[in-house]
Amino acid sequence: MEKATSSAAPAKIGGGGGSRRQSDLNRSFKLAIRSLLTSCSKQELAKAFSNFSNAEQESLHRLFIQVITSLHKMVEDEFESLCLETQVGTALETVEQLVEEKNLDPLFSEKSNIMDAVQNLSMAKRNEIHYLMGMLEKAEEQNRCLQDRVELLRQKMPDDSGISVVMEKFKSGILSYGTCSDGI
Image (cartoon, rainbow, N blue to C red; front, side, top):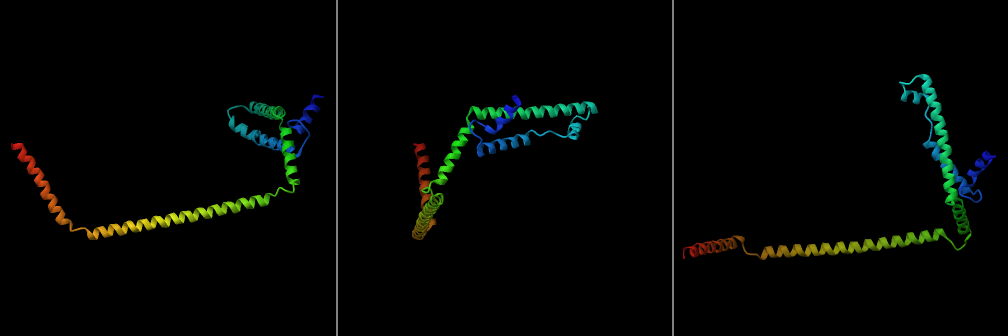
């Protein structure tokens, strides 16, 4: 009788009736653990334990199959227990009910909301592009003004050689002043 109870339990993950979402969750979980906990072939086991005798390898393979089978059962039982404890079934049923209600609501128009969002986002991006283009044009204009100013200053500036002669005389005057004051 215990076998009948445990075999019926997986259909009711997390309590409640057996909804489509519950059976999908159960099926997906079993497929996932099956791919994770696959047994290796006798050849792979023999290759891994080549220093064992054939009888020991056969025994080891049977033991490995038993462990994997037991592990599958334990993981499935633990998953079922966790689903019951956290009431996954009830939560999935609530989600399913909300999805059905949303689909039946004539005022809910998913497409128009998405299209509005797309249109608003496109408009915001266009505005941002225009703003950035304006900022770029302004910066380019300021750059041109600065270049014009620099060019104008270069043209108005007297010959550098005259300034450098005056500077040399000034430096030599300061140096000679320092030597004269030492002698006093």
